[in-house]
Length: 151
Picture 1: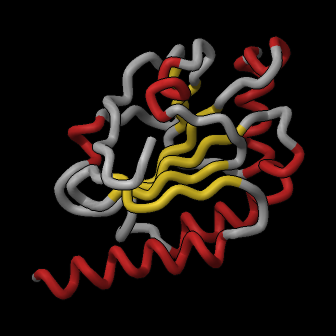
Picture 2 (picture 1 turned 180 degrees about the vertical axis):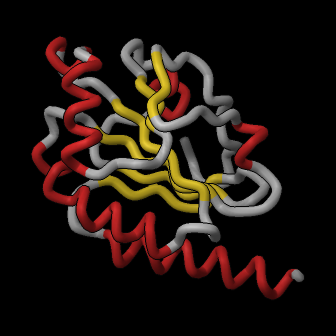
């Protein structure tokens, strides 16, 4: 995906955990962060406490969805995903993308990675890699500030 592309439909989940969202559910009121991660990604595990803190800090002002993107056959085990979800404190909805349908729609290659969409579903920012939550916050704050000016 490129900046200014529209958010794809959230189709192809082999399963949802912690609730289920559609693209239409996410549009209109708040920006959305879609976070790709994998149970086999040690950087994802290292960053998850900071991701959870970010999620909690922006609760009510931001939609957040996690997408589990398997990298290996062992990553397809939903019992392992559910265990990791509990251990890591992931409470936001998780789209399990065992067939890489959403991964392909996003043209995503990385975990962890973050896609920030404005309230109209337009991609405003993409970030891949570990340890960059402060940069993500700055981008989200910029979008939230823009929304306040429009009101």
